[in-house]
Image (cartoon, rainbow, N blue to C red; front, side, top):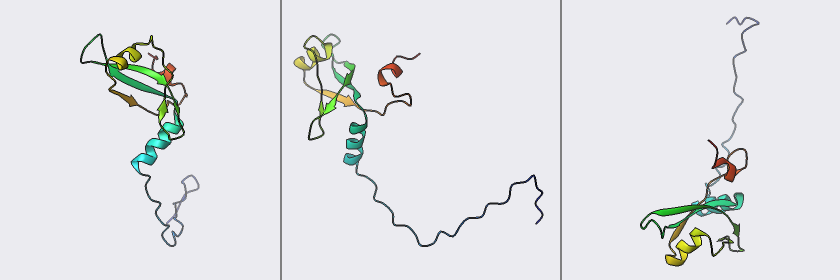
Length: 110
């Protein structure tokens, strides 16, 4: 087989040798704990008191307590707080931050 100087050399694979042991996949709980430790802002959704039956979402900074549970510092005047007083059911959506690291800014970009 003739290869011209302008053509790349064919790739050759090195010997793989014995198979490496497969690492176990992290559990869903481990993945959630990791995600919670990497981010500090999430979307807290409560049930709206003004628009009955509809969710009300707020971007919320949070910290983790010693057991890994999210802690929020919220104002009694905030709409999400008023919603939670009326009905404590809520959800927390946690996602990784965009590549620029600004979750609050990314949410407002055009």
